Length: 166
Image 1: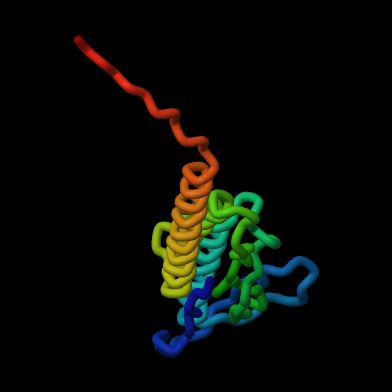
Image 2: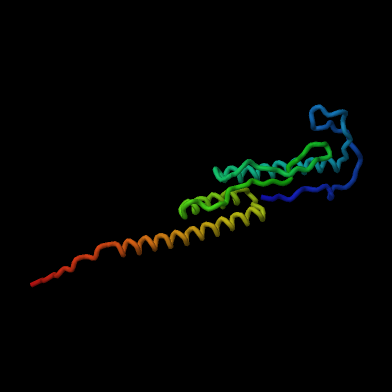
């Protein structure tokens, strides 16, 4: 489930400022400009947003999540990697029965639309799950109709009766 990245292009140049590096064990303080500090703030906000978005997918996917979230990172001017995109892989295969497929499709839709602001790819996955559900419902209707037809054909005919009222 894709997310767009934050870039530094909108940040104007300014004078440098001394800031201690965010990584443990790093060397002397690094000089960062006010623009770099603004970018770091944007990257931190984006990182939190991306992680929350992917956690929403994971929480709703339940057992259909194939793995944990994977992230795309952007290194900030302070040397720290920030998540700017991510995805959660979900098993979108049909179930063994139409009923199971319908249940799975509901879970897939819920997982795809779980974040507060689903992305375009999230909405596409939800649409595919809805189509999967419709196919399963059609298959279930045919299966039910065939079972009723077979039951009707196998049922013994009712014996003829004669009602005589005087």
